[in-house]
Length: 124
Image (tube, rainbow, N blue to C red; front, side):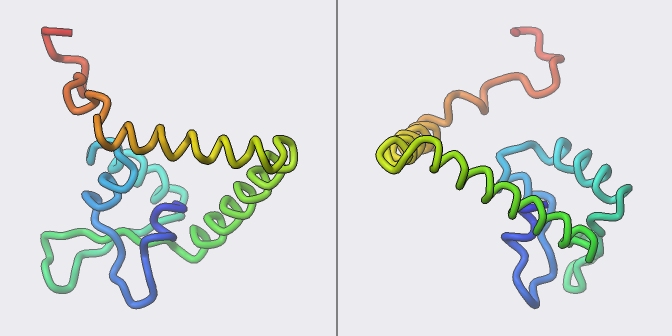
C-alpha cells in the first residue's frame, strides 16, 4: 500500500499491476493475489484505464490512504528508534552497507530470474 501511495500522484490514474510488480520485485500473479486481499478489505480498488479498457489501474481507497499513512508513520518511528539505538556513526555505516547491498543486487540480480517461480520445474 505504501508503494501505491508513494507512486500514485495527484491526477494520475493509478498504477498498473505490472508497474506494482516491477516496483516491488514480485511477479504479477503474486501482486494480483495481494491486491485481491487488499480489495476484499476495501483498501484498494481497481478501475479500467479510460484510454485503454484492457488496462486495469489500482488506487488506494480513502481507508487505504489512512492505513498507508499510519504504516509509513510507524515505519518512520521504528527507523528513528533504530538510529537512536545504533548512534549516528553505526547508522551511517549501516546505511552505506545497505546501499552497497542494493547496488550489488541490482548489478547481479542475484540470479533470481533463474529461480523456479511455481515449483513445477523439473530441474530444481
